[in-house]
Length: 283
Image (tube, rainbow, N blue to C red; front, side, top):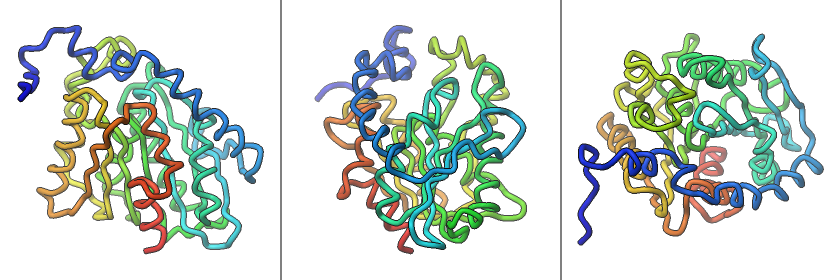
């Protein structure tokens, strides 16, 4: 049996591979390109309220793709990009998968580093979810039936949302964390930190493994079996974090999937991502 990696003993180069998905998957752009046709089709075929603002910053905005029926269940997707890159425009394919199922879909932007720090990134995502909870009814969505998912850094922000003590209180019907990063300390030792500039205080504050969840919803954690060992461990750690609070999350480590092609699960009606979202939507 192959010996497990020991964080205290691996080299800086190996750490970069373990905790920087671009380093671990050099052909990441090719996997992203595979989703481009789905994205273009969604933009061309679906109704969309584009660039709806939820604050003064230009990245505090979102796209709302309404389902055909009124009072439709709602799903919010938060993109990845290690808190420093990407845009909602590249993830319309999520709406392309969900709107035909009768689910109003919201793709959310948020502030990015280095213009802000990770605290500012998180604050904008928290505010975005609060805005959706308050206003989605104006766009045909059911504010009492909102689920949420996020990929990579977006999974971290999803975890931040369900750990936040909103006032007035918010509720979600389900949360899906895809290939997430949950402890920023792991990132601080990679080249990504040249942009993030994480301080010890920020690392501690934004570590969702140290804080209880506030929204006790149906929770699904998904990670690729072809991702680096220590990256997969983050999802396992978060799974146990939820279990220690008496929650009953599901955990899926899926063979042949890496950090980028895992987003293809939005086009697998029998896979754990779509099953979790539709289960939450149907109550």
